[in-house]
Image (tube, rainbow, N blue to C red; front, side, top):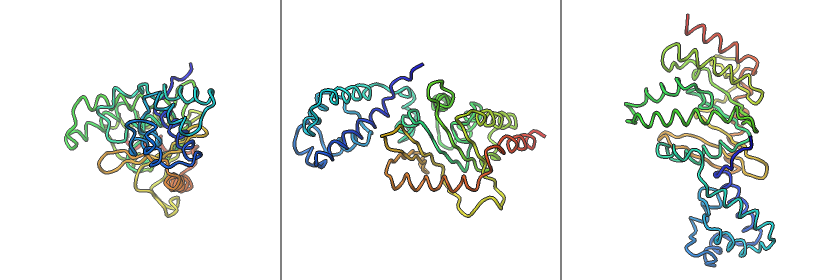
Length: 296
Protein backbone atom coordinates (compact mmCIF):
# COMPACT_ATOMS: atom_id res chain seq x y z
CA UNK A 1 0.00 0.00 0.00
CA UNK A 2 1.38 3.40 -0.97
CA UNK A 3 2.04 5.83 1.84
CA UNK A 4 -0.26 8.79 2.21
CA UNK A 5 1.23 12.26 1.79
CA UNK A 6 2.94 13.49 4.95
CA UNK A 7 2.18 17.20 5.41
CA UNK A 8 4.94 17.91 7.92
CA UNK A 9 7.71 16.61 5.70
CA UNK A 10 6.12 18.36 2.72
CA UNK A 11 6.31 21.64 4.68
CA UNK A 12 9.96 20.94 5.42
CA UNK A 13 10.60 20.07 1.79
CA UNK A 14 8.87 23.20 0.50
CA UNK A 15 10.61 25.44 3.02
CA UNK A 16 13.98 23.92 2.21
CA UNK A 17 13.43 24.46 -1.53
CA UNK A 18 12.29 28.06 -1.00
CA UNK A 19 15.31 28.82 1.15
CA UNK A 20 17.62 27.37 -1.52
CA UNK A 21 15.90 29.35 -4.27
CA UNK A 22 16.03 32.59 -2.26
CA UNK A 23 19.73 32.19 -1.54
CA UNK A 24 20.40 31.27 -5.17
CA UNK A 25 18.62 34.48 -6.16
CA UNK A 26 20.94 36.40 -3.81
CA UNK A 27 18.14 37.73 -1.61
CA UNK A 28 17.91 38.01 2.18
CA UNK A 29 14.77 37.42 4.20
CA UNK A 30 14.51 41.15 4.81
CA UNK A 31 14.71 41.92 1.08
CA UNK A 32 11.95 39.45 0.27
CA UNK A 33 9.67 40.92 2.93
CA UNK A 34 10.48 44.51 1.88
CA UNK A 35 9.71 43.71 -1.76
CA UNK A 36 6.05 43.16 -0.81
CA UNK A 37 5.85 40.44 -3.46
CA UNK A 38 3.50 38.72 -1.02
CA UNK A 39 1.13 41.02 0.87
CA UNK A 40 1.07 40.48 4.60
CA UNK A 41 4.28 38.44 4.58
CA UNK A 42 6.44 39.42 7.53
CA UNK A 43 9.95 38.32 8.53
CA UNK A 44 9.01 35.79 11.22
CA UNK A 45 6.40 34.12 9.00
CA UNK A 46 8.77 33.69 6.07
CA UNK A 47 11.40 32.34 8.44
CA UNK A 48 8.92 29.81 9.82
CA UNK A 49 7.89 28.79 6.30
CA UNK A 50 11.51 28.19 5.32
CA UNK A 51 12.13 26.02 8.40
CA UNK A 52 8.96 23.98 7.86
CA UNK A 53 7.24 25.28 11.00
CA UNK A 54 4.41 26.89 9.05
CA UNK A 55 2.71 26.06 5.77
CA UNK A 56 2.26 28.47 2.89
CA UNK A 57 -1.45 28.04 2.33
CA UNK A 58 -1.88 30.31 -0.70
CA UNK A 59 -0.82 29.02 -4.10
CA UNK A 60 -0.83 32.64 -5.29
CA UNK A 61 1.70 33.55 -2.58
CA UNK A 62 3.94 30.67 -3.65
CA UNK A 63 3.76 31.75 -7.29
CA UNK A 64 4.69 35.29 -6.27
CA UNK A 65 7.75 34.08 -4.37
CA UNK A 66 8.83 31.85 -7.24
CA UNK A 67 8.48 34.75 -9.65
CA UNK A 68 10.60 36.91 -7.34
CA UNK A 69 13.25 34.16 -7.23
CA UNK A 70 13.28 33.86 -11.01
CA UNK A 71 11.68 30.41 -11.23
CA UNK A 72 9.83 30.36 -14.55
CA UNK A 73 9.97 26.73 -15.69
CA UNK A 74 6.39 25.41 -15.68
CA UNK A 75 7.44 21.94 -14.54
CA UNK A 76 9.38 23.30 -11.57
CA UNK A 77 6.48 25.58 -10.61
CA UNK A 78 3.92 22.78 -10.87
CA UNK A 79 6.08 20.45 -8.77
CA UNK A 80 6.39 23.02 -5.98
CA UNK A 81 2.68 23.80 -6.15
CA UNK A 82 1.92 20.10 -5.64
CA UNK A 83 4.22 20.02 -2.61
CA UNK A 84 2.46 23.14 -1.30
CA UNK A 85 -0.95 21.51 -1.76
CA UNK A 86 0.09 18.41 0.17
CA UNK A 87 1.71 20.46 2.92
CA UNK A 88 -1.58 22.27 3.59
CA UNK A 89 -3.52 19.06 4.33
CA UNK A 90 -4.01 17.65 7.82
CA UNK A 91 -1.51 15.30 9.43
CA UNK A 92 -2.72 11.97 10.85
CA UNK A 93 -1.85 13.17 14.34
CA UNK A 94 -4.06 16.29 14.19
CA UNK A 95 -6.78 14.75 16.45
CA UNK A 96 -4.12 14.30 19.17
CA UNK A 97 -2.69 17.82 18.92
CA UNK A 98 -4.73 19.28 21.79
CA UNK A 99 -2.88 17.16 24.36
CA UNK A 100 0.60 17.37 22.84
CA UNK A 101 3.29 19.40 24.62
CA UNK A 102 5.04 22.24 22.85
CA UNK A 103 7.09 21.09 19.87
CA UNK A 104 5.64 17.59 19.85
CA UNK A 105 3.50 17.98 16.69
CA UNK A 106 6.53 18.95 14.61
CA UNK A 107 8.55 16.05 16.03
CA UNK A 108 5.82 13.48 15.39
CA UNK A 109 5.41 14.76 11.84
CA UNK A 110 9.13 14.44 11.15
CA UNK A 111 9.32 11.05 12.87
CA UNK A 112 6.46 9.68 10.78
CA UNK A 113 8.29 10.72 7.61
CA UNK A 114 11.82 9.71 8.68
CA UNK A 115 13.57 6.87 6.90
CA UNK A 116 15.87 6.22 9.87
CA UNK A 117 16.02 7.19 13.55
CA UNK A 118 18.86 6.88 16.04
CA UNK A 119 17.65 7.17 19.63
CA UNK A 120 18.97 7.00 23.19
CA UNK A 121 17.00 7.09 26.42
CA UNK A 122 18.68 6.91 29.83
CA UNK A 123 15.60 6.91 32.08
CA UNK A 124 12.67 5.18 30.38
CA UNK A 125 11.96 2.67 27.67
CA UNK A 126 12.04 4.49 24.33
CA UNK A 127 8.51 5.50 23.27
CA UNK A 128 8.66 3.53 19.99
CA UNK A 129 9.32 0.36 22.01
CA UNK A 130 6.73 0.76 24.76
CA UNK A 131 3.75 -1.53 25.28
CA UNK A 132 0.32 -0.05 25.84
CA UNK A 133 0.32 -1.18 29.48
CA UNK A 134 3.74 0.36 30.16
CA UNK A 135 2.75 3.65 28.52
CA UNK A 136 -0.58 3.86 30.33
CA UNK A 137 1.02 3.09 33.70
CA UNK A 138 3.69 5.71 33.04
CA UNK A 139 1.08 8.42 32.47
CA UNK A 140 -1.01 7.26 35.44
CA UNK A 141 2.00 7.52 37.76
CA UNK A 142 2.62 11.08 36.56
CA UNK A 143 -1.04 12.14 36.66
CA UNK A 144 -1.22 13.53 40.24
CA UNK A 145 2.08 15.36 39.75
CA UNK A 146 1.47 16.77 36.28
CA UNK A 147 -2.27 17.26 36.99
CA UNK A 148 -3.28 15.69 33.71
CA UNK A 149 -6.76 14.43 32.78
CA UNK A 150 -8.00 10.98 31.83
CA UNK A 151 -8.54 12.28 28.30
CA UNK A 152 -4.89 13.36 28.18
CA UNK A 153 -3.78 9.85 29.14
CA UNK A 154 -6.10 8.12 26.66
CA UNK A 155 -5.02 10.32 23.74
CA UNK A 156 -1.32 10.10 24.51
CA UNK A 157 -1.39 6.32 24.87
CA UNK A 158 -3.20 6.06 21.53
CA UNK A 159 -0.70 8.45 19.93
CA UNK A 160 2.29 6.44 21.15
CA UNK A 161 0.80 3.18 19.87
CA UNK A 162 0.10 4.81 16.51
CA UNK A 163 3.70 6.06 16.28
CA UNK A 164 4.95 2.49 16.72
CA UNK A 165 3.24 1.46 13.49
CA UNK A 166 6.10 3.12 11.57
CA UNK A 167 8.30 0.16 12.51
CA UNK A 168 6.00 -2.46 10.98
CA UNK A 169 4.39 -0.66 8.04
CA UNK A 170 4.72 -2.65 4.81
CA UNK A 171 5.87 0.30 2.72
CA UNK A 172 9.31 1.61 3.69
CA UNK A 173 9.28 0.82 7.44
CA UNK A 174 11.26 3.08 9.74
CA UNK A 175 14.82 1.94 10.38
CA UNK A 176 15.49 2.24 14.12
CA UNK A 177 18.79 2.12 15.97
CA UNK A 178 18.17 2.43 19.70
CA UNK A 179 20.38 2.30 22.77
CA UNK A 180 18.73 1.69 26.14
CA UNK A 181 20.62 2.32 29.36
CA UNK A 182 20.28 -0.50 31.87
CA UNK A 183 18.68 1.67 34.62
CA UNK A 184 15.86 2.51 32.20
CA UNK A 185 15.22 -1.21 31.78
CA UNK A 186 15.35 -1.83 35.53
CA UNK A 187 13.11 1.11 36.46
CA UNK A 188 9.91 -0.75 37.33
CA UNK A 189 6.80 0.79 35.83
CA UNK A 190 3.76 -1.02 37.18
CA UNK A 191 3.78 -4.61 38.42
CA UNK A 192 6.11 -7.42 37.27
CA UNK A 193 3.63 -8.50 34.59
CA UNK A 194 3.81 -5.06 32.96
CA UNK A 195 7.60 -5.20 32.91
CA UNK A 196 7.76 -8.81 31.72
CA UNK A 197 5.46 -7.93 28.81
CA UNK A 198 7.64 -4.90 28.08
CA UNK A 199 10.82 -6.99 27.95
CA UNK A 200 9.13 -9.42 25.57
CA UNK A 201 8.01 -6.54 23.36
CA UNK A 202 11.52 -5.11 23.10
CA UNK A 203 12.89 -8.53 22.15
CA UNK A 204 10.13 -8.94 19.57
CA UNK A 205 10.78 -5.55 17.98
CA UNK A 206 14.54 -6.17 18.07
CA UNK A 207 14.01 -9.22 15.84
CA UNK A 208 12.67 -7.05 13.00
CA UNK A 209 15.16 -6.63 10.13
CA UNK A 210 14.85 -2.83 10.26
CA UNK A 211 15.50 -2.54 14.01
CA UNK A 212 18.74 -2.66 16.02
CA UNK A 213 18.57 -2.41 19.81
CA UNK A 214 21.57 -2.30 22.11
CA UNK A 215 21.78 -2.20 25.89
CA UNK A 216 24.25 0.10 27.61
CA UNK A 217 25.15 -1.78 30.82
CA UNK A 218 25.41 -0.07 34.16
CA UNK A 219 28.56 -1.76 35.41
CA UNK A 220 32.07 -1.23 34.04
CA UNK A 221 34.19 -1.93 32.08
CA UNK A 222 31.82 -1.31 29.16
CA UNK A 223 31.07 2.40 29.76
CA UNK A 224 33.99 4.34 28.30
CA UNK A 225 33.82 7.74 29.92
CA UNK A 226 30.95 9.53 28.18
CA UNK A 227 27.27 9.17 29.04
CA UNK A 228 24.54 11.59 27.84
CA UNK A 229 22.18 12.62 30.63
CA UNK A 230 19.26 13.47 28.34
CA UNK A 231 17.24 11.44 25.87
CA UNK A 232 17.48 12.37 22.21
CA UNK A 233 16.66 11.19 18.70
CA UNK A 234 18.44 11.89 15.42
CA UNK A 235 15.98 11.69 12.52
CA UNK A 236 17.15 11.13 8.96
CA UNK A 237 14.74 12.14 6.24
CA UNK A 238 15.02 11.20 2.60
CA UNK A 239 17.86 12.50 0.47
CA UNK A 240 17.83 16.23 -0.10
CA UNK A 241 16.09 17.06 3.19
CA UNK A 242 17.87 18.14 6.38
CA UNK A 243 18.52 15.71 9.22
CA UNK A 244 16.89 16.78 12.51
CA UNK A 245 17.59 16.16 16.17
CA UNK A 246 14.96 16.03 18.93
CA UNK A 247 15.37 16.44 22.70
CA UNK A 248 12.95 16.81 25.61
CA UNK A 249 13.38 19.43 28.31
CA UNK A 250 12.39 19.71 31.97
CA UNK A 251 9.15 21.52 31.04
CA UNK A 252 8.00 18.49 29.00
CA UNK A 253 8.39 20.45 25.79
CA UNK A 254 10.03 18.91 22.74
CA UNK A 255 12.71 20.79 20.83
CA UNK A 256 13.62 19.98 17.22
CA UNK A 257 16.56 21.44 15.30
CA UNK A 258 18.08 20.83 11.89
CA UNK A 259 21.14 23.01 12.49
CA UNK A 260 24.18 21.03 11.27
CA UNK A 261 26.15 21.87 14.42
CA UNK A 262 23.46 20.41 16.68
CA UNK A 263 22.90 17.38 14.46
CA UNK A 264 26.65 16.71 14.47
CA UNK A 265 26.84 17.01 18.26
CA UNK A 266 24.05 14.49 18.90
CA UNK A 267 25.33 12.13 16.22
CA UNK A 268 28.65 12.01 18.06
CA UNK A 269 26.80 11.36 21.32
CA UNK A 270 24.98 8.42 19.78
CA UNK A 271 28.18 6.98 18.35
CA UNK A 272 29.78 7.27 21.80
CA UNK A 273 27.05 5.27 23.54
CA UNK A 274 26.91 2.59 20.82
CA UNK A 275 30.65 2.09 21.26
CA UNK A 276 30.08 1.32 24.95
CA UNK A 277 26.87 -0.70 24.50
CA UNK A 278 26.62 -4.46 24.28
CA UNK A 279 26.34 -5.90 20.75
CA UNK A 280 22.76 -6.23 19.42
CA UNK A 281 22.89 -10.03 19.54
CA UNK A 282 23.23 -9.86 23.35
CA UNK A 283 19.96 -7.94 23.78
CA UNK A 284 17.52 -10.92 23.91
CA UNK A 285 19.54 -12.71 26.61
CA UNK A 286 19.93 -9.50 28.62
CA UNK A 287 16.17 -8.95 28.54
CA UNK A 288 15.45 -12.57 29.43
CA UNK A 289 17.69 -12.30 32.50
CA UNK A 290 15.85 -9.15 33.60
CA UNK A 291 12.54 -10.92 33.12
CA UNK A 292 13.66 -13.85 35.27
CA UNK A 293 14.83 -11.46 38.00
CA UNK A 294 11.55 -9.58 38.16
CA UNK A 295 9.24 -12.61 37.98
CA UNK A 296 11.17 -14.99 40.28
